[in-house]
Image (tube, rainbow over all chains, first blue to last red):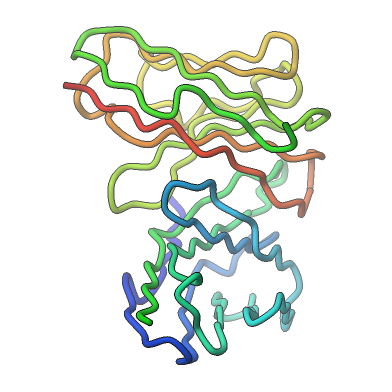
Length: 115
Length: 116
């Protein structure tokens, strides 16, 4: 059974603060690491798909890094805004010989940005 | 529409009733996934379709759960003789390609199922 862990479980920050959270996963048979943002009453939205050790991706004020050797990924949000409030999910796609994109999700980090 | 569409958005059923949840993926997407998300948890894989073929149903929790995608587009997840533990959000996702893909998955809004 794969164990994908996210920390912290929840986070409250003030508008303008920068923040980051962690996704830990087993490093064996790694294929890709996905990050999704899930706002209340909406569908999960893909942020990044990361595949290479040392990968760093950026989308506006959000960026992510990947370390496949030690099994972790960080998500950073610079200058948080209230609209960043959401649950952030990471998910592991592990190549088991016949990987087709089957994802194992962490439990999510709930971010609340206070005005 | 351009996105993945799920219906109904909310479903309330009495214990023992059968329910059917519908997913309309993005047109042309080969892969279709169903996930179950219990309160406070991340989504958990239920089943996977490549076109009309159900290639993995290892996540279905019991034989009361059945999924189909007969024409390789719309999919239905059916739960027979519902139990309270079936209460969850059921998410459908589709992606363009298949094997060894690093494509993101595109999710619907989910169906929130409550069993009374």
